[in-house]
Length: 237
Image (cartoon, rainbow, N blue to C red):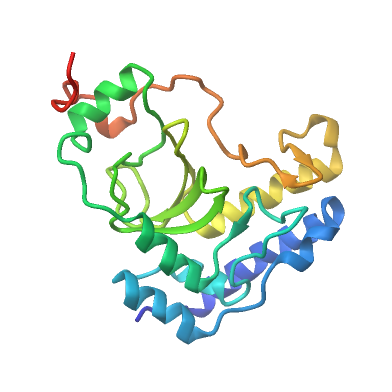
């Protein structure tokens, strides 16, 4: 099992402290919904069940907050972050065999070119969640996952937002620590100058659209730039 080094813990502890301080200013009633720490054995169980090695900063994060509980206002731009046990259950429930046709780069390029897929950042929009760990959800429609095996240009451990209904994939941050820092910065802006803030907050908490690319039809990600597009063979015309 992977271990959490002191540097990872210090970095994530600082990031969470910054998020919590900003929440006290913007959404103080959300703070009790952040769960307490997970035991090391619970975090190890994720790696054993899913046969993955979690990024050290995410392990450290679970050792501070083992997800968050349902309720409003939510402390994060989701219904809740999963606990260690939920991470295993939800990732296993999501995982499926890859579709050799739809998951091929030429078909991905075709779907992106025609606006059927929205992909912002270096992430593979595949049907399988292999080498990915689901960490939170908004009503099952919008989900965050940690990508452990991204394509060229990505960073192992990057955090991706997937909107299933909109077929939209956005890389939110290169790491869990960077995600928390980005979120803290937006909360701080909302506290300092709410009229100019891009973070939408209502009685339910921050909107799940946080972090997405505002471009309606972004170009292909760099790793697909030179791929010759083709439609799925399974489609009939």
